[in-house]
Length: 167
Image (cartoon, rainbow, N blue to C red; front, side, top):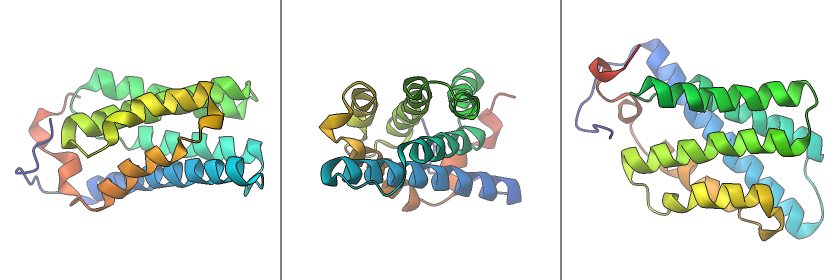
C-alpha cells in the first residue's frame, strides 16, 4: 500500500523514473484509445504493426521505471514489459506481443488499485485481457483511467517510503 502521507526526498533519478512511468502509462492509454478509434471508424491512425511496437515500447518504459516495494512483483512486471519489447523486436506473432503488453498493463493497473484505489481501475485488469481475446469490444478507453489519475498525483506518491524497498 502506498504511503501518500510520507514524502521521501526525491533525487533526480526518482523524478525522472516517476515521470517516465507516467509517460509510459499515458502513451499506452493514448495508443489503446487510438486503436479503439481505429476499430470504430475503420480508419487506423497507425498501421497495426507500428501500433503494437509502440505499445510494447510504452509497456517496457513502464516496467523499466516501476516503483514498487516488493522486488518479486517488480521483476515480474518488468519481465513482461521487456518480454513484450523483445518479442516485438524478433517479429513474434502479434498475439504473443499483445499478451505480454497487456499482462504488464493489467499488473500495473492492479498495483495502482492496490496502492491508490483510483476509481474504476479495478475493471482494467479484466478489460485488458478481454481486449487480447475480444478486441472488437472496444474496451481500450479503460487504460486512460490510470494515466489520467496518475498525472494528478504529486510525484512523491509513487516513491513512498524509500526505506521499504527491497533491493
